[in-house]
Image (cartoon, rainbow, N blue to C red):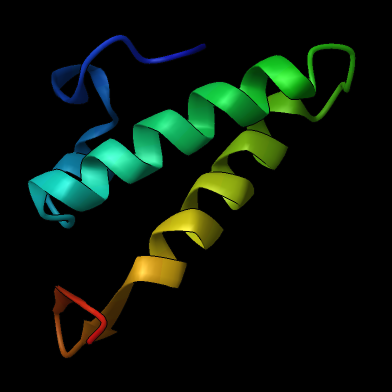
Length: 69
């Protein structure tokens, strides 16, 4: 299901990503969810694509996600 605001994101996303990374995740997830509407693995694909979008802009150092420079 698409997410209207960051507060709707799963706790595992909200508790680990900074606000801007949550925006990236939400927008990528919603776009991928719509693009894979007829795929039986729609939700799984949307999550994979959203995490890939976050990883283009952020990297995990230790337990923290930080912006790439």
